[in-house]
Amino acid sequence: MIGNKIITPPCNELSVTTKTDRVLYLDLLKCFAIFLVIWGHSIQYFKSTAYFDEPIYRIIYSFHMPLFMALSGYFSESSYRKGFLSGIIKRGLRLLLPIIPFTIFILLLTIQDINRSTVQNTFFNSFWFLKSAFICWCLNYAVVKWFKFNIIGIIVVLFLSQLIGQFQVSVMYPAFLLGYILKKREHILNYKLYCILSVILFVILLIFWNKANWTQTYYSLLPVIKGLPINGEMILRYYHKIFIGLAGAVFFMTLFKLVFDGHREIEAPKWLNYIGRNTLGIYLIQTIILENIASMYINFDSIGFITFNFLIVPIISIIFLMCCIGIIRIINKSNYISFFCLGEPIKIDKLSHIGR
Figure 1 (cartoon, rainbow, N blue to C red):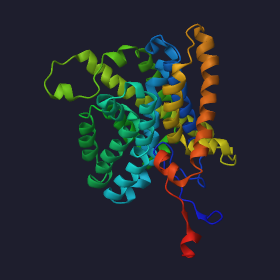
Figure 2 (cartoon, rainbow, N blue to C red; figure 1 turned 90 degrees about the vertical axis):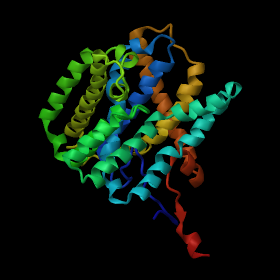
Figure 3 (cartoon, one colour; figure 1 turned 60 degrees about the horizontal axis):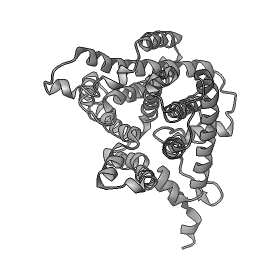
Figure 4 (tube, rainbow, N blue to C red; figure 1 turned 90 degrees about the horizontal axis):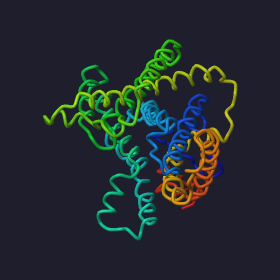
């Protein structure tokens, strides 16, 4: 209890540790991951050239969303202790509810072009990661509760996930499952061998990571199951996409664990904890201010490669990160606004109930 309020610890699919139970390496890892999101989007939206051709962009997008999904799976372990219905409701409020007000905001920014088709497409396509995380949680519930986390259940659900072509679930669920397994077998993160092997695999796969991995690949195995003409090269790219994400996620999770987890006596700065707790809000807000507003006015086509990628983009990413944090602080001043916009549990004034 703080003052006269009971504070419910925030449960965030992108960030779910509580304020009183912070882990330094996990906070650093989440800060690193959300910074890469903003960095990658800055490259994508602040130049009119093909962002697929930008090497820094390709490196970031080879692993950063699978890393986030692995973290979601890692922090989901405790959520399976309750029933399916309560879990669905809690995850839905946390992950899906905020999509509504933020999508409406996006529509208001394009009000001159608004029509039924625009509304449908915007609601369906916006914030794909949160929808994917929700579906991945549901799939993993079957593995954990219905199949009791046995190998048959894992294989069955993994196969089912490969038939889902929307929201990149087929690529993201293996990362979610990986994160859950790493939480159940956390000692794995302490072995340098896994860090070394994963970075070797990541670098090898990165050598063959190119524009075709976005433009000429499957997004699920459904076309193959339906009996459509099989393109072996596209299937290889499909699995390339899955395994480079998994390798990158394992590498950075083990790296941050090995480097920073030995410093338990160091108390993380409050700003680091705050970013770690609010990566979901940062993801939502940067979509508005960076992708949909700033992208209309900022252009760095005349800036050289090195200056743009290693000076301009990091600086502007920090600025946008600070803006997101400032907006989150304003939103959190209202229980109801933070509930609808960020999925935060509503704080209950205990004394007000006592006085009634």
